[in-house]
Length: 250
Image (cartoon, one colour):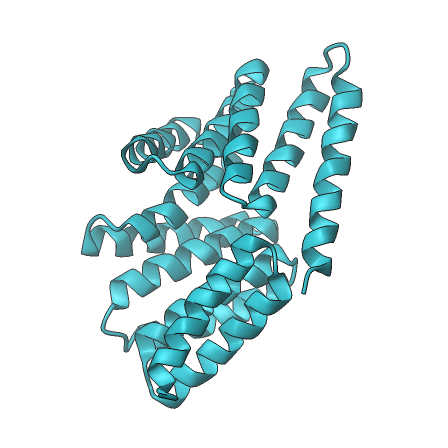
């Protein structure tokens, strides 16, 4: 049919799936094509969401400044979108994760607050919650606001129990591990990260599994129990292999 809107939609979903499958170059290519097509037909909602997903990919690849530019352009496009609040909630959540990765905690907090405000405007949304709740835990932990982090973590755990998918359970366990580590509850954190790694692997989400491996290694390094140094080194080596495989995948 060669319908631009249909092709753009397919490429947007394809990009998201390729990212989770670990084919980052193909994900980026699909999302850039989706953005171009949506822009040609002035479909603001589609372009904004494709930019949000490209921002996720570029942030994962460590291209933080480029990702920020893509996301910022997405927020401009989203202002004229039919799904304005949904688009902005997801874009701000992705920006918060990006700025957290860049070490800019103030910007991460600002983006998170804007995302939460947008989310409140349109009510409960599974996709928005999946982006906002985990990064809310991360930002509040980084700010040492552990009570607030705990509230977001509990919301995420309730959502995970309701949806029941491997990805949701993994996200909740990853956040739980992050919060437990901040409280100095090393055993609890390691148990949570092990669960997260298992469920991310079941969902074929190697990137997030690698992030949990690194987090678990950091906890072991802090705990310093017999055998922790060796296990931490093994976890970091495994995570590095995953990252190298993801970057090398076409």
